[in-house]
Image 1 (cartoon, helix red, strand yellow):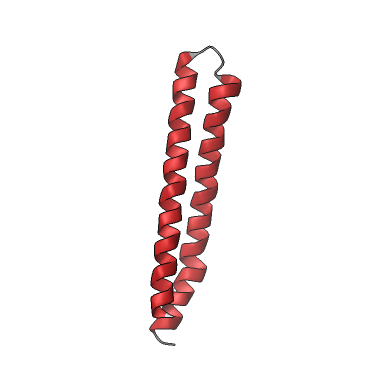
Image 2: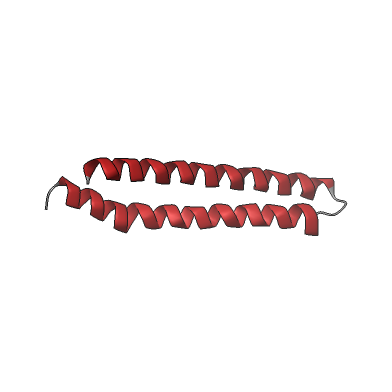
Length: 80
């Protein structure tokens, strides 16, 4: 097994599941922020502000995971 095999196994068994898990967590943070802002928050400005922070950080997490996934695919395509 050469370098290509090692890179492929690391990508398949470590990096992809980690990225998918973090995408799900970022999505849940985003959804929780939406629920806090529009459903639970209502007239409470503190809950609305907290919900908006969750929305922003959920989007930031999704963007970071998308970039990480792209970089991993780029590196993987170079070595395979």
